[in-house]
Structures are given as structure tokens and as C-alpha cells.
Image (cartoon, rainbow, N blue to C red; front, side, top):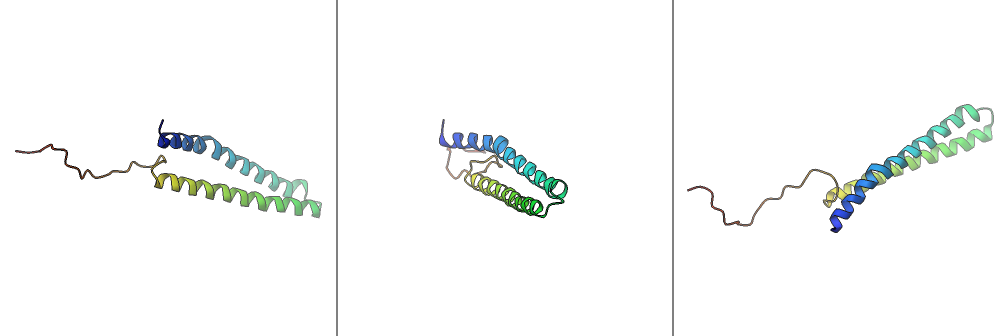
Length: 101
């Protein structure tokens, strides 16, 4: 197994299972804190402040996860490890095959 094949497999596992799971958890935490802010802690000012703080941090975490996923995807596809479009390289070497009469 080559390093490129290993990194491509690792990228596929991370991109298919791990990152979507982390994004799902970020959304669940965000929605939980929205419910806490508007429903459960609506009568308590200290509870609302605590829920608001967690809301802000869950949004920051969500944005960081998406940004890091984008940066890693950009780097991997730039170096040819990602699942992007194949790079077409011109053939400058003479193969010795003569086409035509």
C-alpha cells in the first residue's frame, strides 16, 4: 500500500463518517441550546445567559469544524490525494509510435 492510497482511504473515512458525525453533534448541541434559551430557561435570567453563552460557543465550534473541513479538503485535492477530478497531464515524452503514413 502506497502513502497516497493510505491517505486517500483515510480521507474517505474521515470525509464519510467522522466529519458528518461531528457536524451532526454540533447541530444537535446548537438546537439543544436554542430550546434551553427559549423554552426551559425563559424565566431565569441567569439560565438564559448561560444558554446564550453555550449558543455562541456552539456556533463558533460549528464554523470551525466547517472551516477546517474545507481547508483539509482543499489541501488534499491540491496535492492530488482527494476525490476531486483527475488531473490530466500532457504526454511530452516520445513513445516511439508514429501515427500516419
